[in-house]
Image 1 (cartoon, one colour):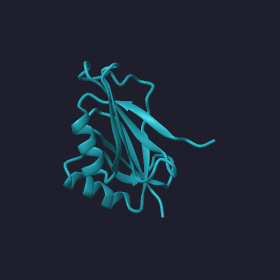
Image 2 (spheres, rainbow, N blue to C red):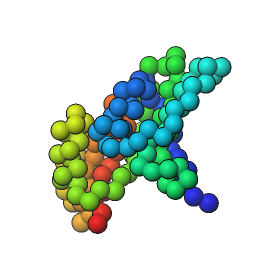
Image 3 (cartoon, one colour):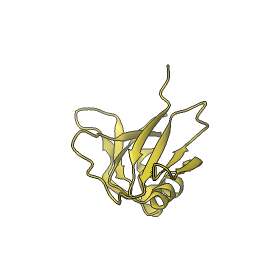
Image 4 (tube, rainbow, N blue to C red):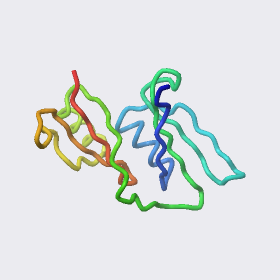
Length: 127
């Protein structure tokens, strides 16, 4: 078994695709409309679905926003330098909600950003 994708619901699909591509450097892998169900799925990621996990962005045509609830945590991305990643995210119009630095009670350097729908994305510094 392996993880295939994580799905999040988004209010404005084009805005979300733009964020994940332009701010985080992902690629749009595929986008499919389902008129009968009144939704669109877009898959974004850093590689082919056959090789790596990706994000599925689901846009229900009749829903403009979602309550994120208190059960959802975050998506985590490995980065070579969390400080530089925050600078790049900010320069590309993204929002840093926790600056890069050691995690509380640990030494791993992390940061948090938010996507346009308010989903948290953790940046974890890795070699």
